[in-house]
Length: 277
Image (cartoon, rainbow, N blue to C red):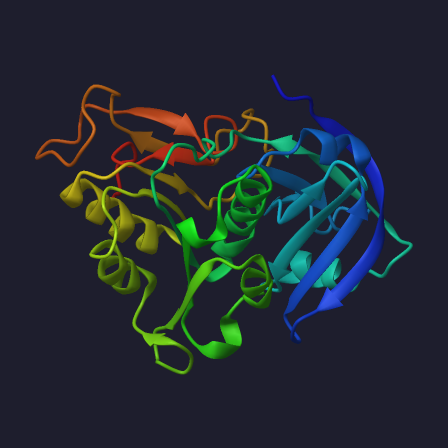
């Protein structure tokens, strides 16, 4: 079992990629030593009751040697705006690492990663850690997509890793014109039985999941959800899942049980989640 830590940790560096996209690096040696790709942190951006709840942030990177962890995020509301206003030297409250994590890529399979919107950080961490563990960058295909060029999230770091990178935008303002599922469909034609890892909004993950089931491919999906507590008490992030012996779409989804994204996830196997609607 991975240890969890809670406390105030200092910001040591801040980088702005745009007016709304920021990266914070924090000194948190205990968290850095115990973090795995796919896990997340609960961060409280203010000491006051506004915002009341902490927010979940995927871990973008963790370096056990330097004791640094980082989060890459986009400003959406008051909580993330407060976090973006922080400066090096200030401290913020963090609880983590939380949740399960991606299975470690192994063997000779090609690896395809698909990130939509703010789904890039956990997959960047997975790609970086995989390369550190000996997987050649050329075996990793990374698809990073957004609605438009200005919404892309830190893709420069992927070029630096040396992976095979495809950028896609819905409006064609950068890279491949189309969404992440469109780009993934095109890429899967060039791979023989790859392992697929995906993170992004639920509509995208639903499309990825359907594609993997159609092609009978292994895949792992990192779900995004509101997590008021982050450790399974409130059950506000529960999703419907199929019994393990019945993976795949059925005509009758009444046979299901619930899992909490924060403690049973955020990583789920392909075919596991029931996508309502």
